[in-house]
Amino acid sequence: MTKPVLHLGGAWSSSWSIPGWMVCEMAGLTCEERVIYLSRDDSKAKLAAVSPSGRVPVLEIDGLVLWDSLAIAEYLWERDPTSAIWPADPARRAFARSVAAEVHGHFDDLRAALPMNLLKRWPVRNGLPSNVKLMARPGAQASTARLEAIWRDCVRRWGGPYVTGDSWCFADAVLAPMCSRYITYGVELAPDSMSFIRASQDAPLMRRWIARAEAQAAEIGRNICAAYP
Image (cartoon, rainbow, N blue to C red; front, side, top):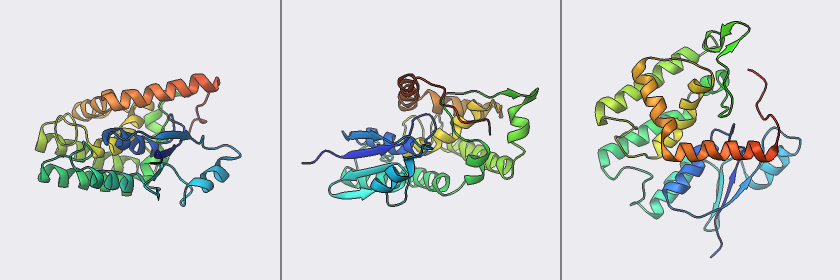
């Protein structure tokens, strides 16, 4: 049987690569991983060669090409419904799917306002906290308020620290890159929101991904941060 191939972007900035990689880990799937660094002269051509959408992650498995993290999650869960991708309890699973679908399909304004970079910290620029400038961008405050409402609902319903309690699932994987943005830009939210964010960033899978980003940076041997947004 051909080994599955997982195409990913650079770990420090490819936010959708995070849930794509995490869900394969949660499924216990051994993949050949291939990295396409984004924003390079040849990136577009390399992406077009493997991805119908021109984006990552992409999973080649069972003769199929899956080019969306949510599709990858559902396919792998259908292969093994006992995996950790979704909670075993139907109510928690339905809730987790609702969270994952909302975050997957929305919040583009927040992604634009706070571009993901796991390795950099921009708490201050030109004497002003970065959150003063960045959170003033269109949609950033409204999106943040909605995320905080989601996090509070998770904890109220299931006790935390993750989306459906003490077990990490795909909804947490989708939220992880969103949570990371507030750390990168020094945006201090309400204490309960910061507790959820820190739990997300301290989760074992996220720590492994951050270590991957650090290793890639060391391998490349140069400053890989994007210009200050």
